[in-house]
Image (tube, rainbow, N blue to C red; front, side, top):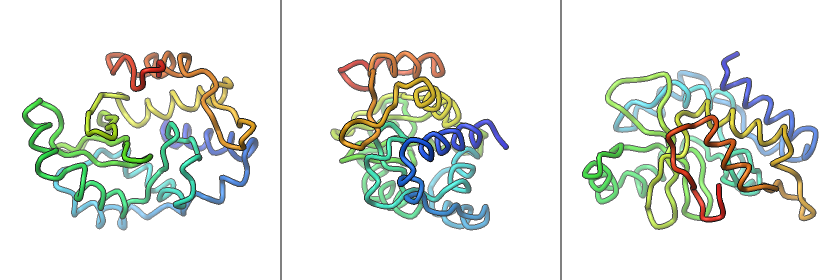
Length: 200
């Protein structure tokens, strides 16, 4: 088991204990061959971590925006991710703007919430990992995590130390946003100081 898969399984174990109904929202994972076939449409090479993620599970059902695994954002299935990448994230204006700013030309979104995305950068050659960027609803972009593994290690610590908790509304909430930001930066030095004005 990879460090990434271990972190994902620990997150799922937390949810199984504290909000077990969410576990049914995760779609079955895809085979490596299925992922390779689908990602052959993508204009650059994605890191092996993305293959691990989609072998673990192929996103969650559409009603799972409150699932919280990926910082309030839904874990989107690979087909929808490819659609969003083509129609919005990597449309010509966006990708040209990023290239001019010395940012990755191609990004692959794997989670979404109301026009916001977390997306991994593509490259000419396949790598084991790649940076994760946060894209807000206006299209602004910030380096959020150094890799998908480091993202999940930060999130699992937030689960296991009580920074994530099931609120009175039944949703998984961030109890302490400033502490969340501190943990994110601990695992991901050199990334954006804040993703949101409130501190995380």
